[in-house]
Amino acid sequence: AVDKAGNTYSAGYASNGAVFGTHKATGSFVAKHGSTGNWAWVKTVDTINDFAMDSSGNIYVTGSFGHYKSHTLHVTKLDSTGTVLWKSTVSGGSVEGMSLALDATGGVLVTGSAKDNVKLGTQTVPANPSRDCLVVKFDDKGAFKWGNVLNRKVVCRAINLDNKGTNKGAIYLSGIFSEASVTLGTDTLTNTTPNPNLTHNDVFLTRLDSTG
Image (cartoon, rainbow, N blue to C red):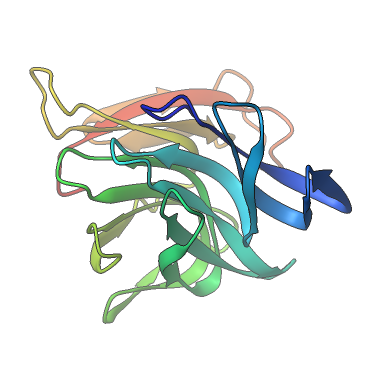
């Protein structure tokens, strides 16, 4: 991502450590490369699967932390100096953030995977024990707004928003499914080569309204 001043922001993972000028990082990181060619800063954060930047140069990252059988989804916001402004989480059996998008009001929407029960605000929502798709919205301060588990045995990989078009506020999700068929809204999709062990997947695209 590139801000208005020409600074470049990147995110990644350094398993054995990496050096960025005078800065070092081990594990997942966000880095700022100045417009003059210098490394301004590097910040170590929880595991990152996706990140985005708003018009003010703030950085938002999503991913997860925890161990193999129990992940917690996180969304972390950093300002242009690398200072963490807030961090919000979603926990449950195992929850992971895969992709995020920013809406016109500064809200952050995240999609990812969920297993077993998921804690969404004050509610605990059941998810498929093997895999399921999760959509969560936080406001610009990191407060939880709403969440939804599709409960359709699908895995969501990407999210995008319509902030200006004819379907303003609409949420678009894409991902994979391996069941024989899934129903999303009024549409039923049939897998060309169904296999519950995820060895053969078909791709889906679906649209939700602004409330999920």
